[in-house]
Image (cartoon, rainbow, N blue to C red; front, top):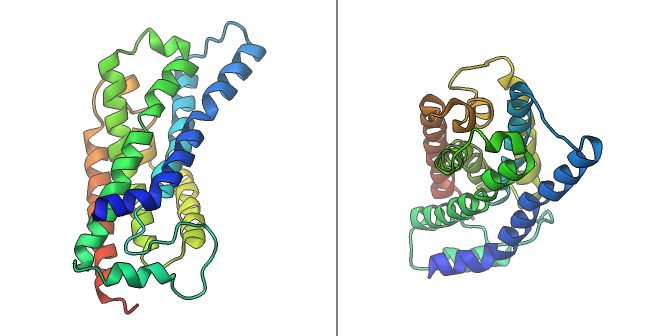
Length: 235
């Protein structure tokens, strides 16, 4: 029941993020062909473009981050608590189960939406098709989803004490800050965005294991912190 309840509360947000993920495909493709009919970027340029795409798609997990035990579906700031929160709290399940179920559903939704990313890059970067196999596209999606889990669970943690509007703004600021900070740590496991772009399986033909492990570690810490907040907070 909790999974179905969570789906009913997030289905329109999932649809919106599908449209968001598809949006750059026709825009960039048409622009590239209009500017240069024989669009042929270099390897360095393609790495940079994939890095920007990764930054663009990192918004998806933030917008789909599980709302913990909150159930309001709008993006307006709330005064006090939404009435449906009390209904959720009255269900005969623990707060741990409420949080894990909502967070698990949101992560699954984010992974499904992110399946658009490999196809988008394959369509928008024709030169990359020559050097990329279907298996490597799948590996790219897997690496992207795992690395994005750090952003996702940042949103989960923020959702435990911020309303939707502030949660999204603070999360976006965190991504921009991380993007600026990543330039100071090129080629290191800490640089998750680097692993989602230039160091992804599209170019290295192998998984960025160190960065993926770091992202999962960060995600576990953030989930533990979110659970602590939910268990100790008085509603």
